[in-house]
Amino acid sequence: MLASFLRSIPLLRRRWTPLNFSNPNVVRIPASQAIEEETIPGYAAARYYPVRIGETLKNRYQVVGKLGFGASSTVWLARDMDGCRYVTLKIYIKSASLGQQLNDELNIYKRIDGASQKHPGHKYVRSLLDSFDVDGPDDKHRCLVHPPLWESVLAFLFRNPVQRLPTPVVAVVLHRLFLALDYLHTECNIIHTDIKADNIMFSINDDSVFSDFEENELQDPCPRKELEDGRIIYISRELRMPKQLGPPVLCDFGSAVLGDEKHSEDIQPDIYRAPEVILEVPWTYSVDIWNVGCMIWNIFEGGSLFTGQDPEFQTYRSRAHLAEMIRLLGPPPPSLLARGNLTSKFFSEEGTFCAGIPVQEHTPLEERETTLQGEEREQFLRLVRKMLQWEPGKRSSAKQLEMDEWLQAELHK
Image (cartoon, rainbow, N blue to C red; front, side, top):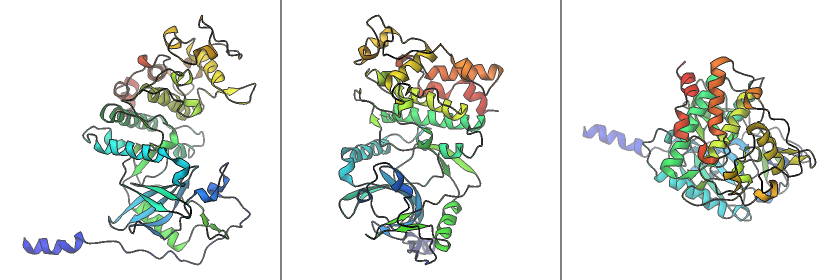
């Protein structure tokens, strides 16, 4: 027994050694060609941390390759040399550009980490493994370390030529999402506020997906653009399809807020904004439920329930969004209008919509659903109606929705 213990000691001290990513066979992109984050409107190079493939951050995380980019961060696959595992690094633009938002997001993750892990929804919420600041040329940059995931529901959606998720996939995504939301709402007191198809990602139970990514970068380096100031812009590399997809996981808590505080601020992606958000009625957890109702229609029916496209201004406007809600759901109840700080901007004292834009002829959900038939169709529409209610208090909770009859029937087929 002692001999077995002594043999195990070197394993406890085991650490991956850094890899050499200096393969010279690189495709170089002309400096005049805008790529990746450079194509984002308002892009400023100085705001981004100049990541280099092969560099090691915090003397622990060696960058393997680029997974993606956005307006506020770049995302990288890395080797956790202390933990002997692959991780994802989300490296934000310089801290001065984001301010309090960085600490707010970190506090959300700390609250999740401190909540009960016995709830079944816990494993469908992305966890935070580590966080630290790295010094850039002009400022510090926050780095969040997560378990690596595959691709988003949105990316998976575009693999289908008709750009709709198959019914069995929709059912699994919805079921796990409701479990995740019930966990966030009841155990963590957190409102996500930004649920969309690119914030839900499939997990991977096969590390060969990441080792193959690493080997591809070593043998065939990704194309890149080298600038005069020494900065390198890399082309993102996709992870290959895993042999088996893991369950969907709810990610990105950059816009999340605490549910045990009062809220009336403007939140959510435009087309997913709940009516109480538009009217500036104090809102709570049920904004997430409305959000899911809109999103699931988007990925299952292949089109959005609402666009908010204003014919006069040719862009999103709240009045156009409200007109679309009325067309679908009928007029809002007086009880909701009475609580809105912005109600008078869109409705008369009698509750008539008077925002200078016509409401099209009433078109109920039944006339817009084109995928299902018979009783299955009616069950699905009942599920959507449980989420898309004018009055926040009339929407079902995440726990109730997780037990919905259509959802349970699809899961047990």
